[in-house]
Image 1: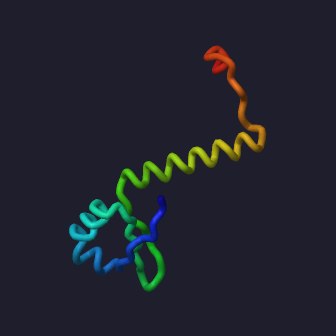
Image 2: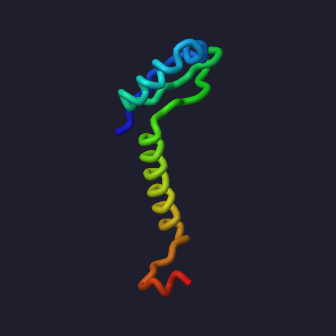
Amino acid sequence: MFSLPDITSAREIQRNYRKLFDRVKRTKRPLLVMKDNKPDVVIMGVKKLEEMEAVMAVLQSREEAQQGKTKVLKSLKDLR
């Protein structure tokens, strides 16, 4: 499930990076880093990133199937 990220500043990362990184690991919530009052980067746990990548792969494969870019394989020989 997606949750809204916590927000911090780039300066706060410089001052308290370990505390903030530990919070990301503990809460499993992403941390949005602002620079000059604009979103700059997001810090997230590896597991959350892997989950997002898996979801994106499924969505991409669905899109490719809808566009007819996929092929139904009936056996392993069809992989050649």
